[in-house]
Length: 416
Length: 187
Image (cartoon, rainbow over all chains, first blue to last red; front, side, top):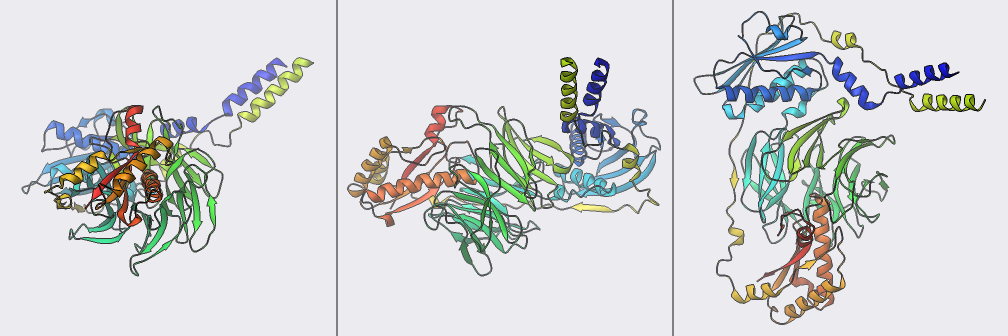
């Protein structure tokens, strides 16, 4: 009897897998990839910087087990570096500066010493090398036939506070390694891309007497005022065709959600609750999700536009104060502790509107500003932990998180 | 007999708790074989990645009240800040007294000015909800001022969320200072 019991127990232990164990198994079976530098120009410190950037991008793809060792070689060597012989793939690149000072990068992806894929890249200045690194990772991912990482090429726009009532709006790459200040001076916050092609953005100007939503065209640098509201004005989402905006305004003295048509310049009040309604996001063209305090604490609700149908979306967490949606999925920020006297923890959770499925995406620190990529493949967020801030990328379907440390100040708001 | 019953119950429990629907291993071969064999390497293409460098710089002419009216700043210095509890926008009794004092000032010494109520929050929740919380605080102060006899047309509101902190230490006392509504006089 005891033997039978022992056998059954062993059986149970062997097959009682959980999700974390499964992830480790998957990491082990990803094809290995090593990177070899064959650069001619540039000093060692820049070479290493570029190498680190490309390693980080390749890791984020989540389709390779990327080797982190830096190895140098000649671009035309027929064989890979000896220590990389056991690697399934080797990415070899050569950086050189041309007469115009532009950074050129040639790459080839090798498998069994044969060239599988090759491409050349060029960018006007060395300092914006990260865009080449992202483009290389994007192309290799396409070549491997993995699910698209189009979001890697998209720009992030964010605002940061630089002093009391002073802020800047910055455009960056998805790792925030490259940063270009687009709007300086004054108190301008909550930037939001105005269209899919990211050629313009909306933001809230708090310097005028009344909070004003403004529109800035990046190409012409022209600014125009869109709409104003006493007390609060935030553009929370823009419809995929760029015509309808979801705004938080206080036309009646208290924060409610409004939809605004930029063509007709007419708005409709979508919520009328006497507490707080904010952070509306399109789930599809007829339904929005938003944050409301109608249960006495902030939580996620949905509303069918042009009806009064409101539904509670989240049944977990006592303070869920921000969300982002993509189709049937909603990612929301939940406060795990409610304490006026101590450091609070905020984690991100993912739910599906079609199942009861809840997945906790982060475990420690203050995790905020969750933003789905347009295709829903990735979630961008900011993590503050032990006095350090980082930008995080969650590959939803790969069950992986990546963090890139942030060098400057606190992010006020972010859009992707 | 008891032992047999106990051990069989334990094994059944173990079996059910450790039930995994997942495939224990991922097929390495099927993963790698999906990589298409390239017939011929295409001619190498060059991608030029563009970037623009222009920027808008706004000079702060909005704040240009250079010849400051002394009496206005005098009045402003007498106006209190109204403080709130964590995650709350209700006004407590002590703060109600301060609002009454401010309303008295508004009806007498500061009769010719309008007031802008600036709602602020602590750093816990740097998102839209926090801005709305700041506005609800300003809105409640506005209601209290109106009930004290201040004309509603003299009052405007703005919420700064957590972005106008007066104190940046990570302490309870500091966070409490940031959960407030300030009075700013307008000519």
